[in-house]
Length: 183
Image (cartoon, rainbow, N blue to C red; front, side):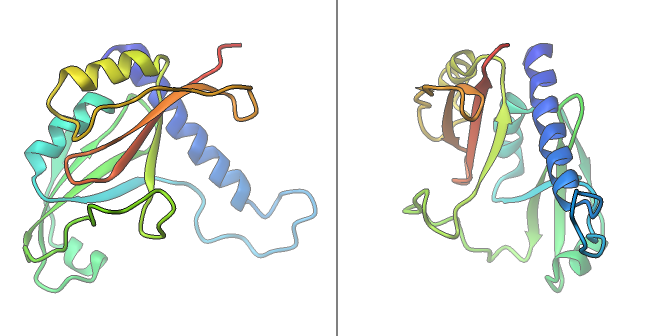
């Protein structure tokens, strides 16, 4: 992945984190609420069935990673007897995507294959890229995506994006890449 794509992804993640921090800040004009317990987003965690397969996919859209093991996950995730393989995929800056593969127990349910965009169980990770077409071409050329990305042009600059696409990772989680209007 090129440096410009990694930087763009990092800026998206930082921007999302900053937006959440500002939204949760009690110093907003007119706010009388107590301080929020969270002040920043460190990252997101996604449970995966096969770590090596998921690393291949996320390395294509995010970048490099590091691996971590630890007994504290049993308590953090409230899964008795849990033993996990944890890998963090991180762009040059900003929050990370943490991949969790449960080695024990192995009886987790798969992502429902018939999940649609408006189902409550469905969510997606949103990443920025300078060129959605080039990112889609890279995914089409790889065997990492479970479906073929279709780039959609977005008319009007209401949200500030010019094109984007959604693709599913090997476990069915949706990942959306968008390109901003260049100003």
